[in-house]
Length: 388
Image (tube, rainbow, N blue to C red; front, side):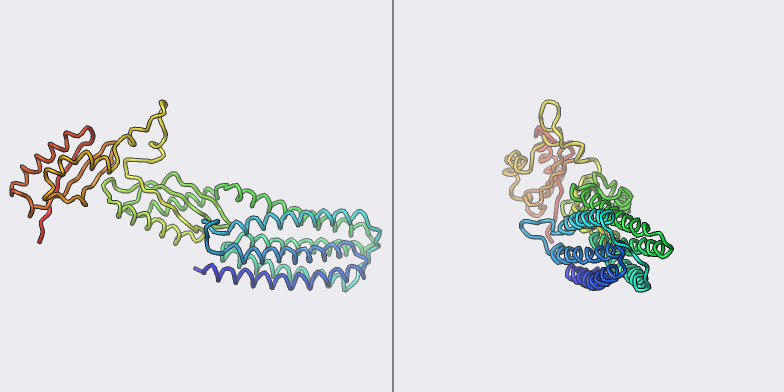
């Protein structure tokens, strides 16, 4: 997988190459259009130069978007790409409107010339090549901005096809064909612009990615052993990358470290199988507990039953009399609390070598009686360890 620096360098290289060709083709078509008195060819030249302007936007955004997260941008800077794509779309709408306006407000008499047709054919070939080159690079690094810029190049090639049709119409004596071709060019540009703006505005307001992609990600997580029923999946897109929140079930008696291991395993596996996933935040639920079902307040505004159970500091305070009575051999660091089925189970570990008697069963029963006197919990247990 490419690093952020490598992705930035690729995006910049592709954009610079496209910008050079946009500049050359734009100037060529405007000159040839002026000599041929073809408004459609001039409009197509302006379109190519507008590509040059947007290439500058793309270059700047690509330089900034893949910077590392910082204090003010903890999720990174990928939304710079999204915002730039929206700006690019607005610029294209302005360009399209200007071209359409000029098509109905000029008195040029177009002529079909061999150099005019040659310039158009050259544009179609070059811009189609740039489209495939840029689109491939955008898909490789997951950059929607580069893909959008690639389609911008494709729109230039398609609009040049319309210009070619207009010039052919002029050659056969239909002067109005040049104006029609100019309008078609404007419509091509406008269509691409509206699609770009719509898709990226949806991303800016955190619209969820394609549901099919989310289901595929859930299937990937669910395929792991000891990880069950991925649920409450939330996702947002940033410049084609997916940032994911996911809940998973793990065995009820899994330790904190095992739950953390399983969450890391899910995160790694999902990102490996789905390169578009940039980050995964995994919340661990036990297999009898779903957080989203229990965290809301009840109708009286009280805590739900699962959260009415005491936390560790309160449990240790309540266990004070037990711990004082058996402090010589109970290992305080190994006290485990299991919140299962809306009840609390306490597991104590005692050191057999430090116990006052070898009648561990009798000691265990005494400790369990003390535990069962607490106003909460069930299924408490005492384990014995032996030093070697």
